[in-house]
Amino acid sequence: MKKGIYEQGNYINEKNDKINTFYIYDFVPEETIKMHAMKSEHTIGSRTANYYFSYNANIPNQALVLAESLSEANKLIDDYSYGIKYAFIRNQAGEIKFVDCSESPDDELCTPD
Image 1 (cartoon, rainbow, N blue to C red):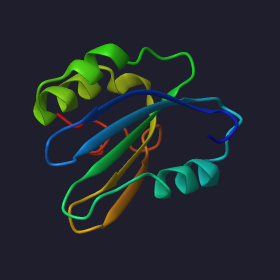
Image 2: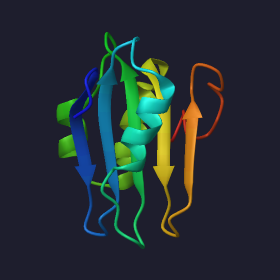
Image 3: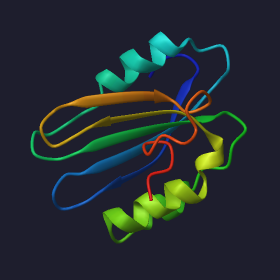
Image 4: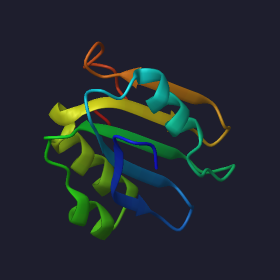
């Protein structure tokens, strides 16, 4: 764990698709968050998404852990998307995308539903 980045709830399905949530403090540089995201565990053929929320945001931790499908987990993230500062995804092919949601709030990664 990097200082100022704290793991919260996770979702994982039978295909090894993952959604990870973290809260971050304002002093953490964007480059540090990018490096943290790049080090996330990933399985080829699955997708891994990280959502970095402001330290004072509400995050649906327990509901995310209990989600019964990827679409339900994405809906939960979307419901709380107003608190997302950064979003990251590595898709099934290993391609990555990192978005500063405060600068691009309408990016589809920042509102995943």
